[in-house]
Figure 1 (cartoon, one colour):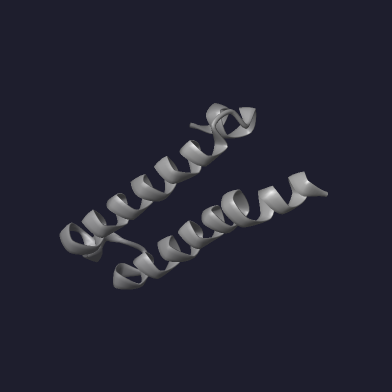
Figure 2 (tube, one colour):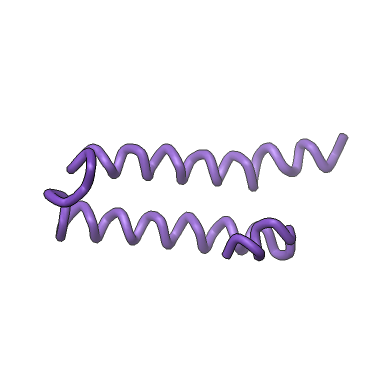
Length: 68
């Protein structure tokens, strides 16, 4: 996935896949193995912040930079 991200091919599709995968992974971790996570139940908060960052970078910031 890193090569896909750095190549900038299909960046919107790549970002959506990353958001979905991180979201699903963290929901599963939250319900199945939260006792093994470093911040236990608060780990989902950090995942949500990461998802917002990926969304902002791809769908809000990148189009603004392309228009300049």
